[in-house]
Length: 119
Image (cartoon, rainbow, N blue to C red; front, side):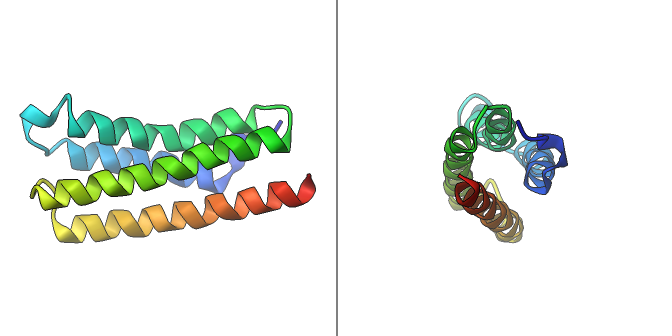
């Protein structure tokens, strides 16, 4: 088992979730149970899957959960682009969030490679 709270990728993913909640809090009320909820759930999935994978008994299982977290990163990015297209999100906010998602993606992929090398 790994200590997920010590993983920088998990810490940054937790910060990202807070950022998402702040951003989506300004979305139209009619989106509360639609796009807002979907973005929030996908964002929460990132650190949640990192933590769940860390609690598994093997590096192979951990990598599987990191792959799920990786997919959630793409999901959030797609939903943020849709939000920008609907003018719920400013272009500069989208760019900032994509930078953060790219960092999470690279860290996640790096951790996957490290775990795969350990076997």
